[in-house]
Length: 116
Image 1 (tube, rainbow, N blue to C red):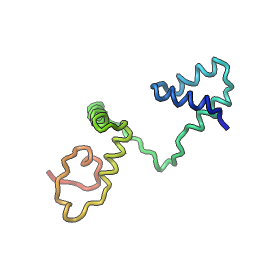
Image 2 (cartoon, rainbow, N blue to C red):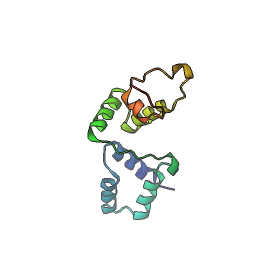
Image 3 (cartoon, one colour):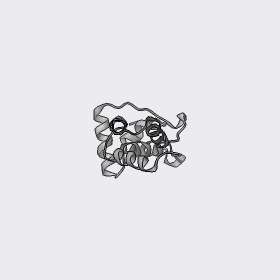
Image 4 (spheres, helix red, strand yellow):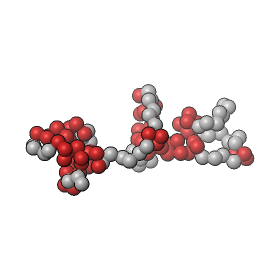
């Protein structure tokens, strides 16, 4: 069972923008046992399967567009990408198939090929 105070500290440090290395190193220097620190970090790992994980490499221009849109929609970057992917996978009714998608990012990830 991980130390609750240590877990809360790690969560708060992550919210403030510190990466795991920047959090782990001072804890170990202050005398926290390595096993206890690692147990706290492992309890915070998401419980995803590999099939739920997607890696996407984007050029800097596309990343800026996504970050701007995420900020406008009050999303994190990953939530914005997830929203775009979800919308691109929605079933389209045959009567709607001829509609033009006005969202460039949805059309990029869509399985349907639209002609311009």
